[in-house]
Image (cartoon, rainbow, N blue to C red; front, side):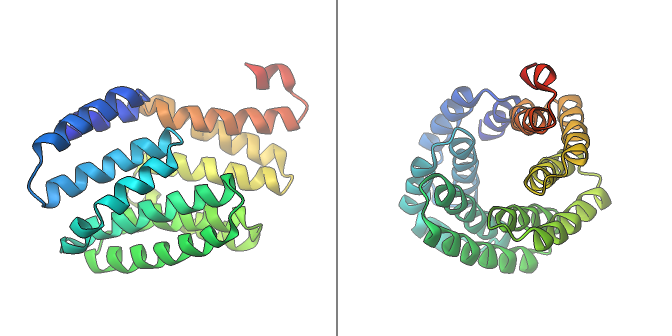
Length: 224
């Protein structure tokens, strides 16, 4: 059920994903890895819906479970989700101290993924650190992290993750005023996500593409 829920999430139907996960969690009463994974999936769904306080509450309520878990990939996922939540809350609520929380959580997640020898998850984490650096206007460092993350996803032929990194890269290029490059990279991200059926992530990439087009003066295309 939790895996079916994640399929709904990938398609962008978040209410269905949330419903399936809530039902699965009602049955996953044992405090083990399966319940922890389902909780992380639900956190991802809530973050995609912009419900960051709900996601944070979900992780805080289950902190004891994640402390007991010995699986380094799951523990890394827990800290990674916390970092994403704090990063988004810092921007939305203008809370600079949350950026520090996010950085600390990213560091702990990196430690856990290294122990798990999980390069794919590390690539996702490196990309998110790059996005955080972009938000902090540390553009040169952000490029370095995003380039490294993209190299790893290409190595493992993870097209969806590569496209997500391209979306972040396009946002960084917009901030730098490199609009032609931003439009090209954003268009590449949208095409890859559409082809893979990742419509939830594609919607976010379309927004980035639209912004690049609008700032380039191509308003009709941006509206479309």
